[in-house]
Image (cartoon, rainbow, N blue to C red; front, side, top):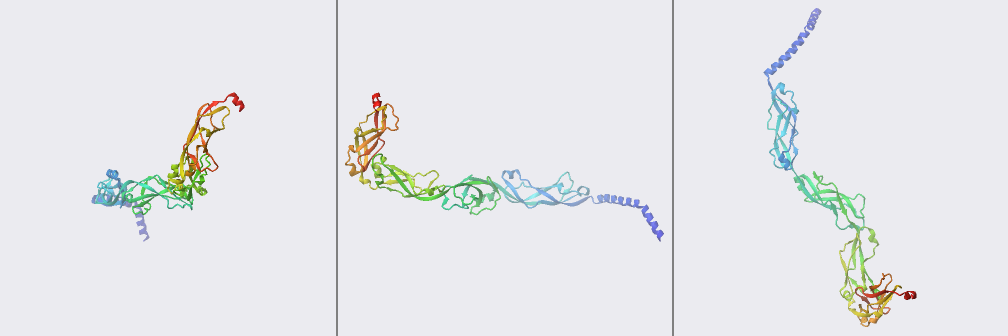
Length: 435
């Protein structure tokens, strides 16, 4: 029995080469027979990426593709086994046909699949489509409104006046319905340094709201600027009494505090850009000089403008105040001719001689009627003070200061500035030596 197995093993080894050659030839013969008997085959090619490019019309109309329901497709192809058996997705293109799109919305479009690189095959899959969403991109400009609601203003101070924002407009670009839903845009100021106690320019970010006033959270839009500057005028308010001061007519002797008066307003509310207003107990509107106060002024009142320091604001809005005189009926006005004998020149330079050229001057006197009716020209004196004056030879005009006779006169000289003419000549040597 062992001899039989040995003979069989020896024969197998001897014919091994012949057996291998037979197997190889059998495979080759099977391959060629398969080609002849089965010349065409069908296979599926998967994961061919879908491409889409907006048409020139879509680009001109700002139409963009926002969504496509498929990223790739699978097709069945048919062809020679030796031609198509190694084909892959990269040997094909799948392109959406967008030629029929003329407006925004949802569209179903055909997908055209084609082989590349001269591949010989038939694509047997038909009617491939894709559902795409097309949006229209628009650009609009909106006014920007500053918003200071989140600011913490110091106690006793408040925002007063116009809150300004820079820039005042914003340009928004995005999907048409989203952009059109924007009702208004705010620049919301946020002060990160705590309590705001002074006027400040604060950075702010845009916040978008729809037409119903509801905030649009993180809108998918682009806009012209990310940061705004909001100027916040912060002031301290205070209501203060109003007062006016009277100055006496030069040399008249009349006590202006004895002149009764009333004012059209007794207090105003003002605002300062800092705490300096705390140092004020009253507002001085101005002063009224008796030397300029005529009987007409007493009877009709004097109007003074309300002027505040730079940076202050007049919250009350009063532009002026009128001072009236309730006892005006007790006053009168008379004109008096004052002769040169009542003129006195003082502080005359020693190098010059002074001669009075004006013989008399008519002045107006305002006072209590029963007082001025008893006055005469002799009750009025004039002084010409040359101290500090630039003196040179020739005829010169100099201002006159009047005084009324008595220690407590009930009247004053009023009117425009009075002047007299003096002749100035050089003094002789003898006069200079005497002086």
